[in-house]
Length: 254
Image 1 (cartoon, rainbow, N blue to C red):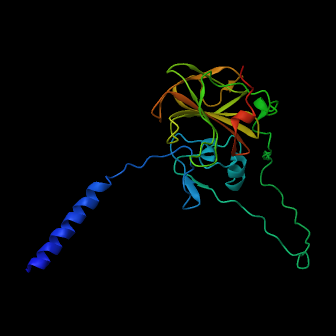
Image 2 (tube, one colour; image 1 turned 120 degrees about the horizontal axis):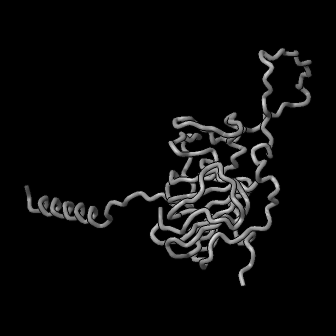
Image 3 (cartoon, rainbow, N blue to C red; image 1 turned 90 degrees about the vertical axis):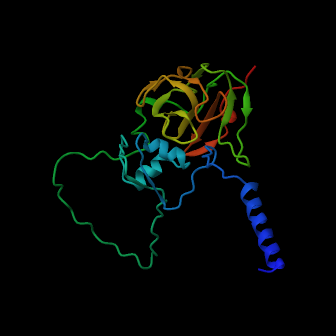
């Protein structure tokens, strides 16, 4: 091997070593502020998930997922079940080609009534909530505000000490309580009516279970640092599945 070839081989080896040591391997971290990328158009249900938590994860309206997947109240789902995330679009038929036919009468095979899904059928306990009258879920200072610009924050982060109370921001029903959504730690989701949901993340301990009814101001958890690096409460409000700025709903502080 010539001296020139040896020098070239040595140079290439040095460059290879430098490139390997320059950028060490990074561990993938799930950011709760950004929804997961949908590649297959469906979500495979994992143990502990509910239809509400899946809708929350993808910023979808739970009613949309319910209708598209023919899942009726009380929205029972099972591990391994495939939930379609695609939006059904109505088929438009040209009026010039439309054919009107008389539907045939079909006798039902049984006489058991089928309950038709309506927007309020799943919110009997919380139907009186009108979207106003919210209360602060924690007493600490805001350490991160709502923003849809980078870095995205779909709610607000409220600072606090470990063990300080986390309270329900409005009357509602617990539709999720667990730690199955990556990045949220121990999470509670409350349904206030057919349009409004709220979420309380990174809790230390949870004091409510799925299906419980809660009152505004009721202690539902304690501030923790699960799924994050410091004690805080991450609080979100969703309207029809979409995040809104909680500061537009919470009362002013003195």
